[in-house]
Image 1 (cartoon, helix red, strand yellow):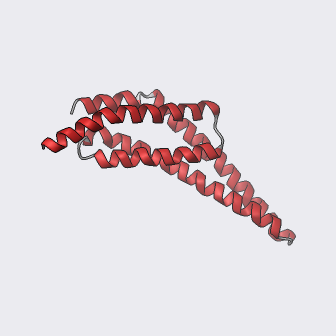
Image 2 (cartoon, rainbow, N blue to C red):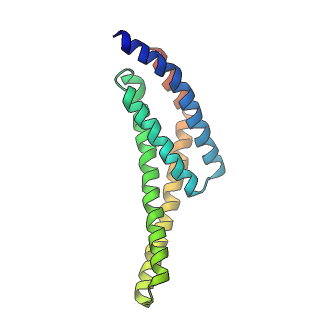
Image 3 (cartoon, helix red, strand yellow):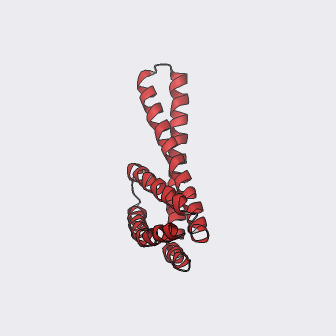
Length: 148
């Protein structure tokens, strides 16, 4: 129990800094309506926050349960965006190699669909992150951690 208390104390000091940095970066991306490459880098940051929360969930189960769900949701949206970006890149490369009009038309259609899905996923991310931030996510999480 003594070791858990010290680990909890260290995490209790570390988490506010991590959370502030994470949310500050996310706010900048939302305000700027950042391009996909920046959102995909933020996906990695979200993964790190999720994994950190998972590691310490046992020490702060009530405080981190909601945080984990939020990180998982954001990560899923950004992972889906990554998939669509990869599809777009693949179809763009294939279009330069294909000469058959029917196949070109099909690739164009699929490329258009991937772009539309990207736009939709971007809107979902911006809306979800904005709602999370406006809802006082950071303050609530850190407050619950102090009460443990």
